Image 1: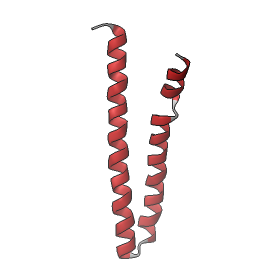
Image 2: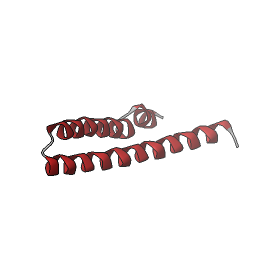
Image 3: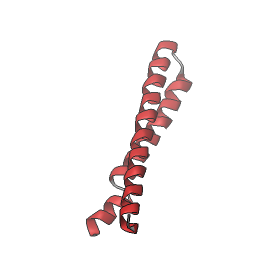
Amino acid sequence: MGAAHGHAAGRAADRRRLWLVVGVTATVVVVEVVGAVLSGSLALFADAGHMLTDVAAVLLALGLGAATLRRRTA
């Protein structure tokens, strides 16, 4: 296995992990919103908003991050 193959496999594994993070975090957002609606908790709504920005940041890293820009120039 050459060095280039190893790096490509590592990048693919990193992207899979980031998608897992998106899934877990988005699930937490949904659970917090449901919990906030059922309990009337403003704190849960606020934390759900914070988690939503986390999801957006990871999606940004996946879709518009340096790796995508690098692929466009390569």
